[in-house]
Amino acid sequence: MVSSYIAWYLFFAGAGGGAFLLGSFVDFALRVSDRPWLRYASSVTDAGLLAGPVLVALGAVFLTLDLGAPDQAFRLFFTPSGSLLSAGAWSIALFCLAAFGAFLLGFVDGGSGVRVVETALSVVATLLAVFVVGYAGVFLSLYPAVPFLNTPLVPVLFVASALATGAAALTVIGFFRSMGDEVAEGLDSLLRLDMALVAVEALAVAGFVAVSLLGDPEAARSARQLLSGSSSMLFWLGVVVAGLVIPLSVDAVCLRAPNPVVLAVGAAGTLVGGACLRFALLMAAQRFCLAGMGVLAFWM
Image 1 (tube, one colour):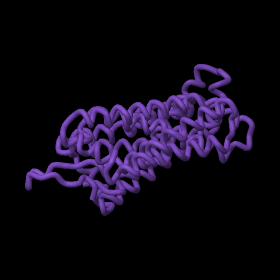
Image 2: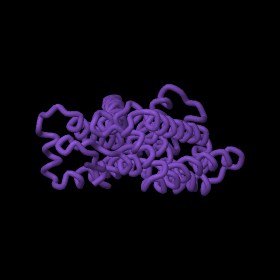
Image 3: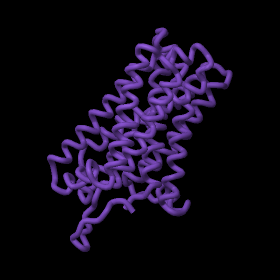
Image 4: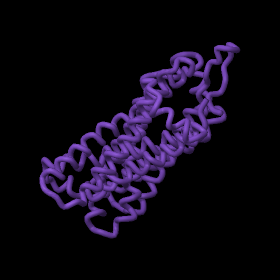
């Protein structure tokens, strides 16, 4: 069964991985193109190259807390089980090391050798970030005993939410750095991208719920629990209103009249919605108990 520690891990790892991927994408794009949009965007997205691994590392702390003791976490690394869980633990550790290494090398004055190593570490960190963002959803979707999450749409939903919350984290950080004109321009330049990411997340949420309602009876039961049961307040107010409606409305308004404070409010809503999404999904899910041939709550 899962606990709040797992929900927080999923949130921080997803947001951190998403923030890093956006920062890495703009960083690599700037190496081959010097378009003004990219320069402005980089003043905001470059924060993801550090904030990303910090958030993922924070997520790893919650994962360790869920395991109950540090020695349990070490077993994930040193027990050659070959499981997806072990692969996820290794990817988190190696991602943080590669990302921090690349970040630090960016401040080192050196020749082409240093830049080659920095680029290599950046590429490795980016590939690992893709795995970090996607593997949790894949892991949860592989268990037939949890019908609500046993669908390929779960990884899609988690990736969409990770990118949206990653962009939101960058916007919030950018707000506190917006005293400079370049950062303010960067926030404005990311408006359409942020709006698109939140819209994709909204479509992923709607598609997941619709498929669940029309699918397996147990999955449909969990979906109804999400929509009208004990998890409905968390879903409608947290996920839908705070995480989707408010950010989309804010982005639409700021397209006409950009305002850093309003943008930060919308981004904060996306972050709240991302956390609520993970809590709501896990709390609504049910699992089969093969020993008693019954259905139990997936949430501890």
